[in-house]
Length: 408
Image 1 (tube, rainbow, N blue to C red):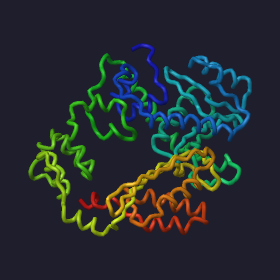
Image 2 (cartoon, rainbow, N blue to C red; image 1 turned 45 degrees about the vertical axis):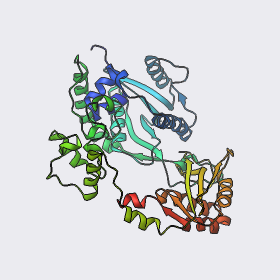
Image 3 (cartoon, one colour; image 1 turned 135 degrees about the vertical axis):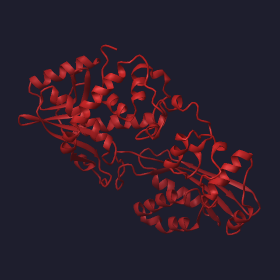
Image 4 (cartoon, helix red, strand yellow; image 1 turned 90 degrees about the horizontal axis):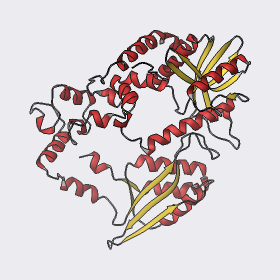
């Protein structure tokens, strides 16, 4: 496999699983399609990376008007030789390894690496991927004086004007990066060895299939696992699931009689094996008997933005823009209410006014997992105090539909 190269993303992928790295490089068509949610996360990360460039204005975007990797790497070297002080997406390569640095800033006779993340905290994976960048840049002869991970500060509350230096938080990770350099060298050698083979490694499935990310080849590697297996038993610990799997126990009918399951888990297994629906009618009746004869069924939809667009909101704050409500009255007649905002600037007040109007009839309000809707209404109460009393009345009428399921 002469000419094979390893990027930063390849390196991080290999740390999770050798087989995943091999397949990504050689048989990407075997992977699962990228979900819309995952694609949105990738796109958001790219947008945040560009947005963070405003922290160091006046820099040169190396990727601009460049198509090929080699061209970007050559342009980076030229910009450095020309004395540029700030580079965006600077490219470097060493021994068939390459990376692009989000923001590279000149400081004295050295450079500072700023790796931008759209997350609100630093993870071990972030440290490892910037360790790979440091390794390559040092091998290329750059004097790296500092390494920072620049991430979203979720404690920042937007005022009228967005303050970029408050939205982001830059944390020095140079000590951890230096401590990882031997790991990088060892792992890189190992990955090139893995990629030199004609066949993918026979890596068994394990907890690495979903941590720190769900592997794009999970469907391929898990094809022999039944659609409902020991991995699907609710609230069974991960250790117990893998203990069973490592004993060759996957299907529910293979679970030993002496294996300890909670009563609720045993009911779940028995229900599946016997193809029977299990309902505790008395306890369910006890729950329903406490409910008013008139009932609303309510569900919210919200959106999030890493960059808060509304005054008084935080990064990633959930902003309600849509709801659906069905009203079941004591005559067993159903009325449907709905709201979808067309206000592209701020949907919240229209949302509040419509919700108060549509929930004006007496009765309990069923929501599933009450904490989400409750928190959204509490946030709206703080943002629009004129409606706080009416919104609190709605909260007081809410009943959590998760209770009978949570209680078995």
